[in-house]
Length: 347
Image (cartoon, rainbow, N blue to C red; front, side):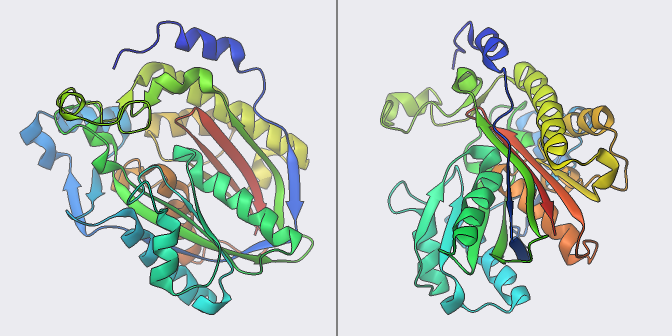
């Protein structure tokens, strides 16, 4: 689709703040879970559709990604990730009293994917979807943490899941290789006063909405044969302005949250950024002074999985036993909307 000509300029002018800063203590992550489809798709596998394996590797850092099987949906991976988190936490379905599913690729528009997950898990709990694209898990984490802090929830299940392979045009060799499918889940519960969100900021700027969007399929453009033929059901992305915005936004937002919490870069044990592009990650790490021992990167094996990106990367660190009680974990998501969210979490 054509980008509105002044969208990038309006974005530059309007982004005057990275979001209001808050803290929310007394909440903990009990356990993490993740799920990936079994089908691996390597860069070389994409040569048949005109993709250059070396270009993908050099420009993005991606070596392979996972694609879900035909006929499966976001709820399948979301349920698997939730079950693994519940098993690790020793939590039963009857204990779950809130389900928040962050996704931009729901099984259906109605009902929500969260309701489908609730049914499969056998929980009796309120369930809702949340769409903040690649920032979705951070938005969901903050939302569920507020339920826990207020006493409205004792065991909240937060899931980030996306089947991004369903959103990209297989005839687009520049966009199709970037994305993969996956799910990550976290269970939140009341914690000690020293545990929780030391600082966080959520934000959005719709002035950049046209830079990353799927134009067809909603109420404005219901899909019909003509729009399908034009590819309006596929993701449209303006890479250069998104790259520029993301590098700046990540640095500004993280600095603000660290300052709010009274911490420095070297006080953080684990840095988990949305796995969009290795060059974006490396630019952010260098700008903020984070070293290799702090950086969590798995994009080479899974690609960009949108809302699943952060919880899957965090699950890898947690399941490996690398996160200790009291560690400070930094999460930062950014993506379509444009949306962003940064959380500084004491484990």
